[in-house]
Image (cartoon, rainbow, N blue to C red; front, top):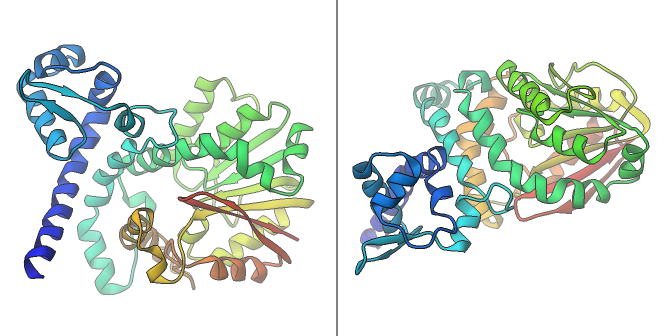
Length: 346
C-alpha cells in the first residue's frame, strides 16, 4: 500500500512539473505546429517553430513520457494524435484546456502568502497574483463559454434571449478579461454590454480585446466591485465563476437585485461541484477542490467578510445567498460537466 501510494504521489509530482512543459508548449506554438502535421523529427519541429533543436528534443521526450505524443523509434519521429490536438492545440474546441497551465505561474508564486494565510486565517487577494492568473483562467474557461453560453445557457433562462435580441442591457460582473462579455456581445448586436471587475489589469486587457473585436462602441469595461457597479435596469446580470470568490456575497447579490429591471434575470455560473466531498471524486472535482484551496478560498478570505465559500459549497449555499438578498425564484437552469448554471429572479 505504501509503495502504491508513493507511486501515486510521484505521478502527481510528475504532473505538477509537466504543467510547466504544457504551458511552454502552448506559449511557444509547439502543439499547434504538431497538430495535423503527421510524424515530425525534433529537427523538423524546431525548424517549424524557430526554437532550439536540443530544447525541442527534451520537450518532446517529456511529452512522450506523459503519453501526450506518440513516438516512432524506428524513424525517431513524434506525432500529436488528433484527439490530443483538440485538447492541446485547437482554441475553438470545447475540450481545449492547455491555457490553464499558464495560470500555475501565478498560483505557485503565492506559496509564501498562502502559507501565511493558512496560519493566520487571512487571505490572498486576486491582485496579489501575477497577471497570468487573469489570462490563464480566462482562457481556460473560454472554450466552454464558446460552446455553451449562447447555444445553451442563455436559452435556458426565462425570456433572456428575446430581450437581448430586442436590444437589452447586460451587466457582466466579475468579467475578468472579458471573454464572456464579448461572446454575448457578438451574438446579440442590438444589445449593450457592460463588463465590471475589480482587477484593473483584467479590465485593461478586456478593453483591448473589445477594440480588436470591433465592439468598443457598445461594450464597455470598467473597474468596479460586485456590490457597487454602476447602472440600473439591466435585463441580465451575469456572474461567471464569481459568487464563491466574494467575502460579502449577500450585499453583492442585493446590488444585483436592485440593478435588475423588474423582469430581469441574475445568471450565476459556478463550478459543477457538490457540497458532499464524496461526490467530487472525479477529474473536474479534483481540479476544483485543489483550486479552491489555493485560489478561491484565499481570495474570498482576503475580503474579511462573513463568507469564504470555496468553489464547492454546493447549490443550497448559493441559493441561500440569493434568497437572503431578496430573490424569490431560483432554479438550476442547465449544466455541463464543468459548469452549473443557475437563474435567480425577484
